Length: 336
Image (cartoon, rainbow, N blue to C red; front, side, top):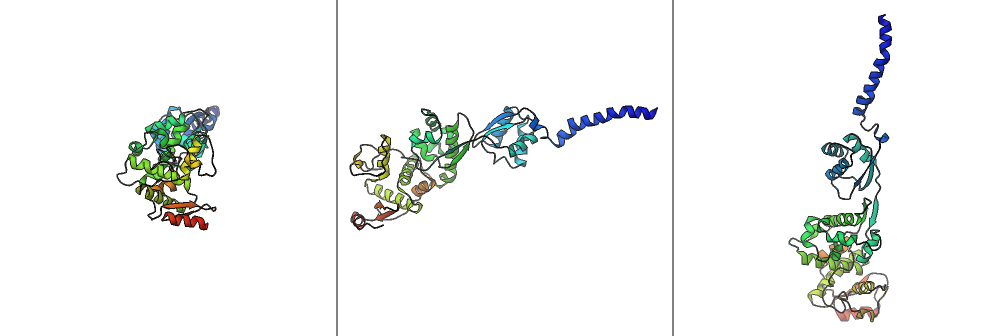
């Protein structure tokens, strides 16, 4: 009789044990075991977002309950500083489960590449914004899109702030905030790589002028080693109250009226524009393009020489001279 009772109870006991294993033991030991089978939520992580910000976004989407536990797991899995921007599909579950999903997930991202020498007018296309979209101007107008250290140094005209967008390829989260994300990421990288080189006490005027100078160097230089020399020449000319006579600024003037010039004639140098440094003394009123990191560093740390003149050769390099007579002689001789 006792044996028969035991046999009758066995199926119920086994069922209870299996129930406990499936509902309590397995989820506790393997928290992400059933994650993929549930309905997933969409979470967007923007570029530059902190681990705390990402964890809050994930909680707001309903994927986890405890932000701090999720941050702890992100730190354990070493993804708190390496989380890529983009849109993630996450199965709600324990904080450990969600963190493990984040570590292996490939987010849907939008890639933006800023090329050195890009004009403001071409940046919207680089950001792949719809024609007529003024999102870039709005993003540049918002000081909070720039590092706090830059707020007091920003030019008044938002368009001139493009000098603080470091050329690079950026992976961004899809959506309507591409311009803001780009400005935040690119200016943050500028602060990291270039901003630390600003001299102590650099003010708004100094920084804006060196940004304009960097954009001119970008337009003139083809060889990295020549950038500091070119920056030094332009500063020498400014100190002697000589016109800069930069062909790059004249090219910009013609671009602004919708005419692309591959080369310039003497007649082209007469175009009426405040950016024409053949007709106007001093720096132009704003940058002509987005400078590269090398052009920025050259404008902040120019080469100290006696050169005042230069011309480009057919090979793309420049010939430098100290006097106008030397400059003309080298041109006549066709020195390459």
